[in-house]
Length: 369
Image 1: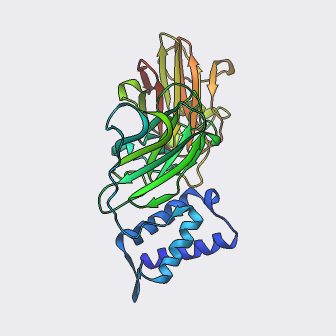
Image 2 (image 1 turned 90 degrees about the horizontal axis):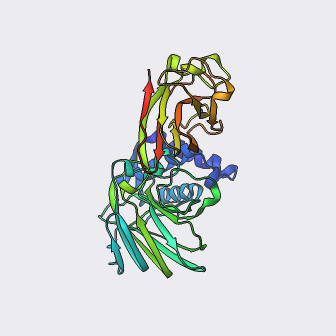
Image 3 (image 1 turned 120 degrees about the horizontal axis):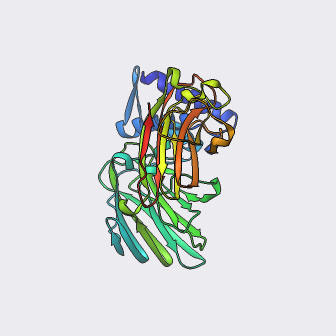
């Protein structure tokens, strides 16, 4: 009901302003709700509210939009579509590297790579451009340009990596890795001007739409005061992934090792014939009032379900600190292992995704029944 949505929106804004809540203190769920209402207004131009229409030309509507954008850290849209200027410089439209002070990279958000912003667990599948900064005191101007006559809300994240290797960034080790970002803006062009530190580790530029599954093409331009190198990594050179979609449901919602039902959780068998660095990524997408999640890596004797677990079998476990993701990174010796994803408490039901990521060879993983 459009009228109820407008009423809810106005009430939410009043409450947030009353308690001076804004920016990162606004919940992800509320930001998503604000953004959806905002896109309806901007793209549909009007929402029926009984005897009249809620139009962007209306001064009351414009004022409400401005208040909502200020609370959520979203920039106001352009007045209308404008043709982007033709960029000049070295161009890259697929995997590879280019160097210089003026770089142009073509890309798209499509399928999994339409990951949306960091409010969603899918942000990590957006296109990632790796940037090597060779000189100190380098200043960058990064622009994200959309084509067409109808624009989505888009932004740019600039992140510092923790390794000299080029490979997909699956998570942030610390919030301080986020060097800079733009506000989300419904416009033909969004720009980020920033100074960047010299580092042996590459930076990662992540262009994204606000919502996942928003498919479209883009051009990213990088203008630098010193020569830089931008790389788009080929799939064959990136992390190899083994992906499972599972669920904690009924008996399989066993909870953590504190409970006898722990071994009722889904279990996955891995056998390594050589030492290998493995990343485990567990994702769960319910944002509202869900239990914290984690993963255990256990020593095993073969491809059969564990019926009980001793302390000396635990190779590694994640912290129970986040309801939406758990990340483990470990060098595993040759041997047999069982991985158990779980919630902290039993009987917490949800779907989940589990990724086994390795460099070089793809490992074989078997779901145990």
